[in-house]
Image: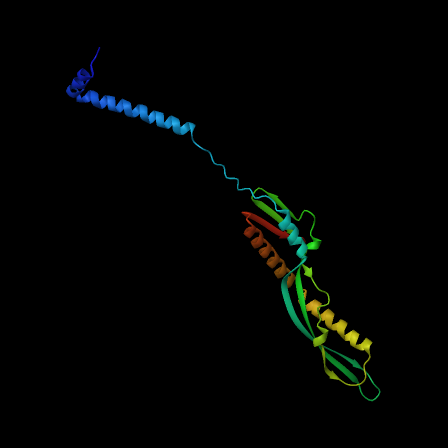
Length: 203
C-alpha cells in the first residue's frame, strides 16, 4: 500500500510530474465546465413579428376624412345686363377654402395588409373633401348697379365656384396632397411599431 507520505516525497523530487498532474486536472475541470454549460444553456428567441391590431386599423377608418392640403382662394366675378339707356353691373367677391384629402370610408376592405414586420397600405384616391367650400357669409358685393334677382346672384355663385375648382384642383395640388397623405400614413404606421412600411394611393 502506497502511503501519502511516499507520494508527497516523489512529487517533491519530480517537479515536472506536478506540472503534468496539474495540467491533467485543469483539462478535466475545464471539460466538465464546458459540458455543464452546454447542457444547461438557455436559448432565447425574440419574436419581433408585430401582430395586426384590428382596433387601431378600425379607428383609422372610423376617422373618415383626412385633410392633407388646404387652399384658400378668392374670386372677383361680375356680370353685365344690357339696358336701353345704360348697362347694369354686378360685381361680387367670393372667398373659399378647398380641402384636399382622402376619405377612409372609401378604402377597400383589404386596404392594409401585414406580413411579418412589413405593412402595406393602399389609400383611397385623393379628392375634394367638402364641395361647399365657398364661405357665403364672407361674400360681398364689390359693385352693384340696377336691380338683381336671386337667380342672377346664383349664376355668379356658380361662376365663382367653377373658377375656384379649375384654379385649385390642379394635378400639381392633387399630387402634393397625395404625397402628404402617403408620408403621414407612413410615419404613423412606423410609430405604431412596424419596421417596414409601404404606402401608395389608388389611381
